[in-house]
Image (cartoon, rainbow, N blue to C red; front, side):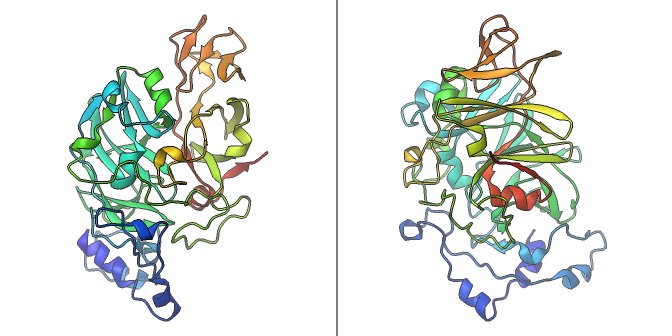
Length: 398
């Protein structure tokens, strides 16, 4: 990766107005410390396509993105350190320091349920883990509020992922430690390096409120913040004020899609190459729960929204942000049986049997109790990121 990053860095020598831009600071830079995420980034942009084509290694493929748009984030690779040896505690133990409204990334595979608190991911961005025998990388990018989990296996070989110290479209760029190829966290694509063109398999891992995880998985495991291997100010948001629908994305150099405000929150779903984004306003209401039915290409989906999750990126304390709610995206079927859903009194019900369902897609009361909907991967994210990575997306805003 050093060779790849050196060539990318060569594209970023500041000149003129670009040199002046190098002094730009991210949110909350006044409270940053040596323990904090990087606070001085190098946003210069240039083109190095000719240099890449002249590389002596004939196996080096053409990049999928302009390397000059891969911006320096300041730290070296793994300067924001991933957690490679995660430890876990019980729900009761974690409840001592997690507030009910705090966001956690939830991953369940074959009955093994785990929560990865955003108060930890904020400072590490990647957790290399194994769950139910499956190697996974749980990834989170604060700048676009995107949590995505991938199976960390490339061409049949298991690897781990690190932070490259770079951004593309204001989103985390990862590297695999097998080949040091650069990958965009947002869509799991290998974009610069020997594996260019490969794509990681995503696993559904929604952002839910801690209270919802406790209720759904009382015997689940929670990433331990006392044994990360690092000392960080867990619980503090170093990006105070960043979740502002009228704000400007940090180090975003794209044109921006004016169908919505750049930092407006959306729920993005992609199925078989088709993508749709729903604004938060279109899927939520004041009743505490809402159901939205829709389609992504030829696939019918149902979206559950439930109040009770705070945004981690608004105030200095992760548990004090405004309520943005939790989202689940599912296929609207119990086995082969199509279902129609509605919300009542803050809960979800199917019209066919009257069974009650949770935000995790499990029937908790009624004829179908114990049944589970198929969960689809989705992103709770900002419009600028969703639209720049998926420019042909449909937007639903009503």
